[in-house]
Length: 142
Image (cartoon, rainbow, N blue to C red; front, side, top):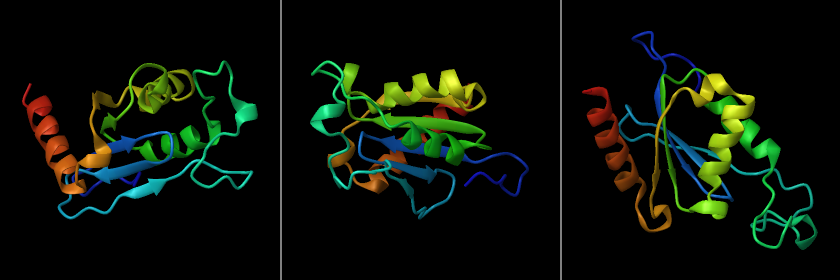
C-alpha cells in the first residue's frame, strides 16, 4: 500500500478504525479490498484486546503500541489519509491514533486531511468508500 501510484504521487487512503482493527482502503481504486490490521494479541484473548489487569483507571483502555505502529507503517508513502472512527472522547481509537502519529510519526500525521466519526459497523464498505470519495473530491477542489 505504500508504493506510489502510476502518476508519481502516493495513494489516497481511507482508514476505518476501532479498538479491534483497522481497515485501510485505497480510495481511488474501484472495488478495492482493505488491508486489515488487527492489534497484536500476545495473551490469546481473541476479540478482547485488553485484560482487566491492563485497565488504567477503569474508564479508558491502554492502547497497543504495536497496533498503531502497524498502521503507521501501512500509511507510509500515502499522499493523503482520511480517518473514519466510531468512538468519541476516551473511547476513540481514532483520537489515540492521531495522537500517536503526531508524537511518533509526524510525517504520516501531516498527511491526515480529515477525521470523521461514522457508524462503521452499520455502514457497508461501499457506503464508506463512497463517503470517502466524496470527502476527497470536495477537499481536493479547494
